[in-house]
Amino acid sequence: MALPLPPGLTQNEVAFLAEMEMVTVVPRQRLDSIDLLGGKTPQLRPPHRAQLPLWLALLLKKQRRANIVPPAWMHPASLAEIIHRETKEDPEAFSPPPPPPSRALYSQPGTARRLNPSYLDDFTQTQQDSQQDPNSILSSPFLPSNVAESPAGYLPYHWLEVAEALLTHAGDDMPAPAGEVRSLLRDLVEVRAAKMRSSTSALEGFGDAYLTLRGVGAMELAENRAFLAGLVDGVRKIGASAEATRREEEEEARRGGDYGGDGDDDSDEDMGL
Amino acid sequence: MSYYDIDAILTDAEKIPCTFQIDVPDLGYLDNQPGHTLKSGSRVALPIWLAEMLAIANTGAVDMDDPSQSSKSFITFDLPQALGNDVVQALKADPRSVPLRDQSAHFYALATHMMELSEEPELSAVLRKTFVSRAAEIVLHARKVGGGGSSYHGRDGGGAGGKGKGKATKDDNASNLGVGGAGEDFLRGLDEWERKLFRSAHDGTKASKEWMENVKKR
Image (cartoon, rainbow over all chains, first blue to last red; front, side, top):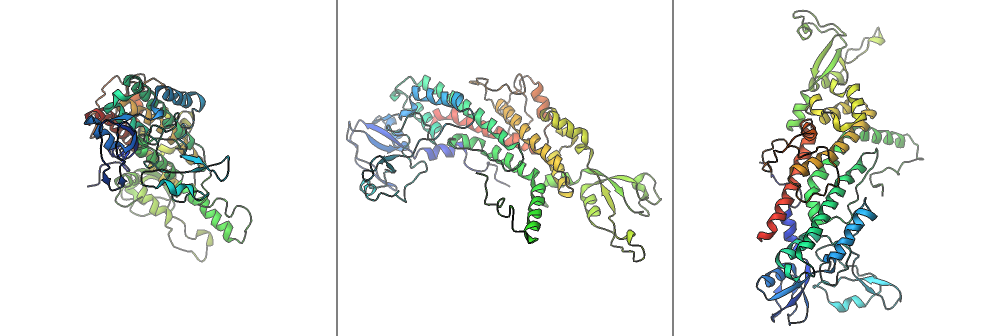
């Protein structure tokens, strides 16, 4: 029997993966460094803050051995600003993702370079060469997007999962009443879902059409993946015969010794970007 | 389309109007004249899988003395009524109000197959636009039926006034047997491709809702 699950990840799986994100924690008890597969966790010496993976932070919080510091973008003011941006300023595209972390480049004043201080890396290696570190990781959950220093006003990839987890288990650590933050989050979910639905209208026109999904969160992707894939596949099938005819004509034109014109313009590599 | 695909098999069973180009002895019963020859030029409705083979194959007989009589196909076919001009015009006018299922349960599959057999650029453009605009409507209904109602700020009006009743799927526990309306008619008029889209959109919404509610239990 075929697997009944939709293609891709389910919501529970996405939430599980989101627990790899790093968050800032204020410990209440001392804890030594733990040797994990990904590296050593930092030593917890209260009241100094430390960065831990979310799953460990939630565990310590449940045991009352730490408090979690919510990231800056979860503040109600930040969420309200994001909602404003989604509805008024840019009703077509999603709000942009947070910029990758960067530091000033001392050898060339006025410029910055990307850096990725994941807990795997050694901080010293990033100061050496002035070129971009070829190994810098730019995908969640290795981006530090949920620690206390993360920039406000941007929604990181796992925003919904992390926000819900923090509200549920660490609601008392929030700077504002959890109810307020939760209602703002629900608003944001609805706005973006409506935007995702209306973004499919870009496919109506003839020719190459694409949907921009920059800034979409993980949970939203999991929800809409099956539908969007089905929709784009349907459009492909409807246009399949016209596409085949067009390709044949191009082949004939090319083979007919006529090398001018759009021999290579409409090749498969051209994505219309 | 794959050989074992049920939808492909069902689509190919749909009938299209064909015109015989030659006389065929003993096939008169197709035209309600059993025992007689089926005359060239008579119109019969044949299933696609048969019509396709007959239309593409030709008789193979080449008449050396009279070149104008050289091999022609057994039949020629037209578009089925489901893809007829009035349907196309109705789709151009308002794609969301046409109940495609009444035309054919496999409307898009049928159209795609016919477009493979003969060139129909206008049909292709109309269908693409229809598909996309109806898909937007479908996902709207899927969200409503999936129970996305509690904090719904009414950002988009939607097709139905109240919650439309979705078709009974195997796992349709979100029993929103609410007031039907224009929504219910729309959902009843979906063809197979659109039903699959509805199912996937509905499942996605339902899973999200379940996850949100279960976050507290972890």
